[in-house]
Picture (tube, rainbow, N blue to C red):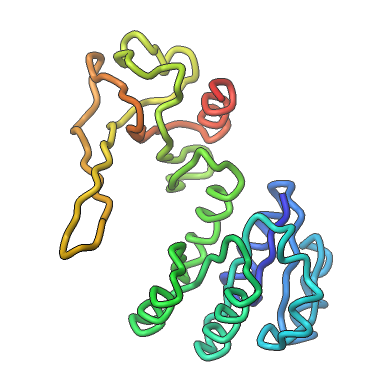
Length: 228
């Protein structure tokens, strides 16, 4: 898959490097030549460019990318202008970095629904989510173990955890299941998640539910890939 990361501060650099290490093609952009040169051996492609320049931005393969991530943090004006330009250029998926409530309000007005936070850990979590579309969210516990939220694989819909036998098959533990509800509040539809409590052997896996799994990431990915 191909991703474009705009802005190579701490967050953008971490995200671009993680995605490259996961085997994706990454085009990383920053207006500072020194940063671009410093990272050229760690990221697939690095480009020195002003992301608020429409003509320069049209030279990037925006329509061929799975997502364009606006990782600009210190210059909110440049971040918002870049995002507005991407909207004008009809980029199919824009992920915006939020560093203030005002910026979030403006992004919502632009109908940007994907947000990221500036912590470096969030960059690794986002890279993992982009690497596997079945992963909704994740949290790294240690070098070996992670907690991952994913949708119930269709193969196991209607089964209990005892019948699915995920722990013995894949060496992962199901911590809980989460049901998703849509609520209409003040004319606006919002999505609400509700955990079912600590999972047990008789916990039933329903279509559309989320699984919260604990285990080694390789085992969790094996479960997801095996049941696609």
